[in-house]
Each structure stands twice: as C-alpha cells, then as structure tokens.
Amino acid sequence: MTNPDVLVVGGGIGGLGAAYALARRGLAVRVLEQAAAFGEVGAGIQLAPNCTRILDDYGLLDEAAALGVLPHAMIMRDAVDGSELTRLDLRDLERRYGHPYLVIHRSDLHTMLLRACERAGVHLRTSQSVVAYANTAEGACVTLADGRREEARVVIAADGLHSVARGLLSDDRPVSSAYVAYRGTTPTASGRGAEVDLSEVVVYVGPRCHFVHYGLRGGGLLNQVAVFESPKARAGEEDWGTPDELDAAFERTCDFVREGLPHMWRDRWWRMYDREPLMTWVDGNIALLGDAAHPRFSTSPRARSWRSRTAGCSANTSPGVSPTTGRWTGWPSSRPTRPSGPSTAAVCSPLRAPGATCGTSTGRPAETATPCYGNVRSTTTRSWTGSTGRPPWSPPKSRRCSHRCPWRRRRTLSRRPVASGGRERTRGPPRRLPAVARLG
Image 1 (tube, rainbow, N blue to C red):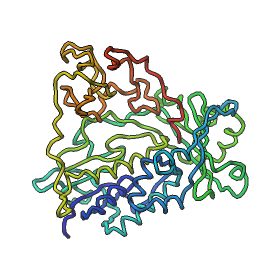
Image 2: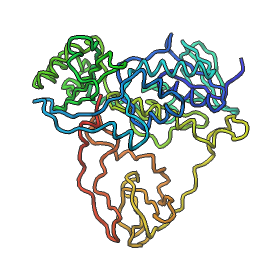
Image 3: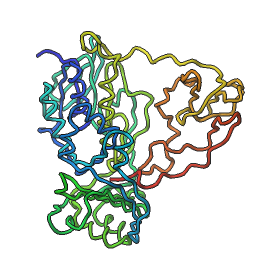
Image 4: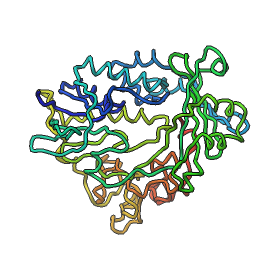
C-alpha cells in the first residue's frame, strides 16, 4: 500500500477536520481511528463566527446550519432566583463578522465531516490503536498495537487528552480541575422542551455551578448541560462527580434549573482535566492537534470550535505545501526572524515571559526597562521584539489561573506595565472572567 502524505491519528472532530482540510489541498491523507467505528460522544456544541467562517470556506456551512440552530440571543440569568443579568444579540455577530453563531449536535457535526472526508477521498480506517510515534529520515511513522507500522511524510496526532504522541514533547500528566459536566437532551414536541424558547442560548450562573440550555437539530431537541465543582474531588477522593453531587450542587438554584436535572444522563458524566502548556506542538514531522496539544474544557462553548479552527489553520500553513505541485514539503524550517533590541514606540501583548524586560515608549534601553509581561510589538514596523525566544502565541506556564478554574486559558493579565502616552501604567489585579465564558 502506498504511503500517504499525511497520517492523522484520531478520528474525532479535530482529526477529521484536519484530514478534510489537507485533502482539499491535494494531499493524500489517511485517518487511523482507535474505535471500531467513527463516532462522537456528547450532545450540543456552539460554533462562533471564527469557526463557521471555516465551515463556509469548506462549503459545509449550509449543511451545518440545516442540522443545527442559529440562535438569536445569548442570555445570562442568576441560577438562584432566575432573574436576567445580561444578554447578547447573536444576530449582531453575523452582521459584524460576516458569519453566524451556530449550535449543533456533536454527532451531527462529526458525521458531516466524516461524509466530507469520504467525498474528498480520505482513506478512513478503524480499529487502529497507535502505541508509538517516531521520526524517520523520510518523515514519520507510527506503530500499531498489532506490531504493524504506518509511515507518511507527516503525522498529525489528534489522539486526545491522553495522547501517546505528547510523550515526545513532555512527560506531564492530565490534571483534574475538580469540575464535572452532566448532559442530556429531550424532545421539544412536548414536556419541558416545549416550554423553552429555542431561539435563545441561556446560561444560569450560580455558586460553583452553571446550567446551560439551547436547541438542536432544527429545534427538535433541547440540549441541557449542568456543570459544578465536586467537593469529593477537592477532598482527593477517587469517586467524584457522582449523581448525588449533581443534586447537591444545584439544590439551592431556581425551580427551572432543578426541574432540568432529572433530564440529565445519570449513567455518564464528564470529568474535566487540564494539561501544562507546551512551548511547541511539533516534534520533527509529528504535530499535536486538539486535546493532545491544548486541552479545552468540554463545557467551553468553543471547545470543539477551537478543534475545527486549529484543524483549518494546520492545513493553511502554506510553507508546508508546495505551491506548484500541491504536495507536502514539510514543516517550516524556522520561524520568521523577529528583530531584537529596544523599541522606541511599542505596545505590550499579554504573552511574554514574566520578568522579561522591554523598551517602552519612553525610549529606554531594554536592559534598563521595567519588568514587562508582554511581548513588545513596534507600532511602526509591526514586528515583534524581545529576547525570550518565545513565540507570542505560546503563553508561559505562569500565565495560568492559579485556581485551575474551568476557564483557565491564561486570562490573568495582571499587573504588567503597558506603554501608553509616553509613560507606564499598570493594569489592575487579576479578575475572573464572567461565567458566560465557561458555558456548556
């Protein structure tokens, strides 16, 4: 059998999205899925305009919209008394960004991508358990559980939170967040589903918990998600996130939220885990994608949106594809050179190593400047300066939230000097983002 240009390990949303995007560039792609059949577990997901734009580029947006729901508004309510706190007009997103906000069933999105891969000629194989990865002179290879080897010019490891390929870059282990999610769907023809406005995505925010609901499958299903912090997990117990904790976490919430709990699947729940950030997701001709590279909590509204977006970006890395033959030529040999030294006109970005120094708009040399927590971008040359060697999109480990909250994506932009008007100012103390950023 001829070796493909690209091997994708993992047939989830991220893996299939990457496979389809690469196949559209004219590459021969093979997907290796560990399970006996391709499938996706879970219920609804939310796709923001930056993801639906990619689906539109793929020619899949109309199909996705027919399978999902285009909500008109996102509303945040108090989970205790049910009162409305704020709302966001989602139709304005389409007017502003040119693409809609879409909610869709995970299995529908996955099936759509699977059909697209089949049409594009992607070689799809199941029951392929990969146990080892290695770089070779011609590219990279994987070893399967039965001892066989598969080779390709490039291997993309979309093999999930417990990625085998990640071991090439780090020996870290998944870290529990102590949060757990319950999901459930119910028909909208009668009962609870018939009482809900399916044109809205509603978030009930409570103490250490939140509850989300929105419509799926053209309004035929109501999707509900309940997320809470587990006291048993905080206490270090092994058996945590159980149904009794679910009921206890929401016992003081309003009637509407409590009435939704019996509709949750009680035989399964999703514990949420994190990983330490990596400085790179590439080792030779092997690249990580999705949870293998940067886990996002499954209740983040854009968790799978991020998978699809990174899958699209991986295919659009033009240095890896020949513009004449369309064949894979490998990862870029080096990153673009960024000038170093002092900058006389700069603004700060939140992704620089703590304690590193930079010049500010005062024109002082970098070595005498105040410690800065942002890569410095010149306002005249539009180029990045600094001597950390850290790409601006790779956040250092210390940018993590200290409390490992579900929204832990290095959002604490705390006390870093920012160049402004020829003088330095300091941002305020870290603040936790509103719970709307931690939706289900």
